[in-house]
Length: 358
Image 1 (cartoon, rainbow, N blue to C red):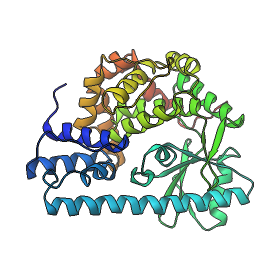
Image 2: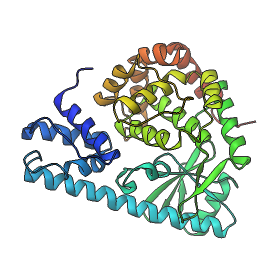
Image 3: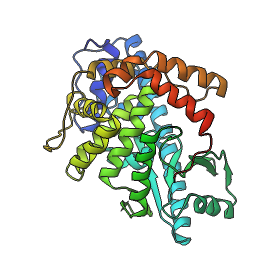
Image 4: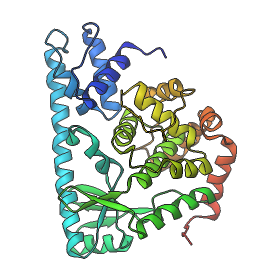
């Protein structure tokens, strides 16, 4: 794959950071080139992780003083925000413990522990799930004066001291989709059966490695198909699977992924983890598919599909445009028809507006 110089440098900086290695550049970059590296790192949600490598470069290879200060300030803001989020998450976990509940952290903040410097992993909302029930989380929040809003069939929002939690009833968007409904049952049965594990000292829990592998794959794949993903998502998977590869039941993982059409995407993510990030995946249960790695990376680096922050009417039209311009993803990675998937989405909107898992 032919990368522009800025993207090539960014990938090297990130690989060095997550592997705790000294960063190496072939030559010094010009100020405009460094500005492009900085801009891409910010857009990809990896500004603080990249800064870890930038600050360790020899002085003759570092960006100019102005950009260094800007980068250091941006990274510090991310770390400060992460600290605040962790404190609020720990506070909410303590409230759950006092109420006889357990708090499962999903996605971002739950995956940050795999990073060499967890606070450098930029997070949005804090995604949570309570095994004792969705409404229990809302009840705990209301009793403490927190704002509960944005209820839909999948989750709602809880705001605590300016930090937003996404309290999940369900882990998937299964509206109108019988196969994703089956996956949701797998997740719900796993949680009800206690298939989650504690971590840290703040009362946090996370899904077991096998269940988490399925969830990360599902979440990343559907974001990739419709909204696009960032380098941060690719790093999340690489660091997670690198650490947990021997704890994942790969036979079960691939059986479920095969049923749902996720296998090629998972294998592409594995290939990127090894080839781009330098993660060692030696478990014989892990498989790789390099046929689409260049195209997936190009799509991620293009960073043109994101819809967050758009008004609802613009968001929906953008999602449709994303799907139409992503036909290759459905054909080559999903093995399904784009128009069939669009029909399922329309069916869900029209006839499955308030779905329940029965």
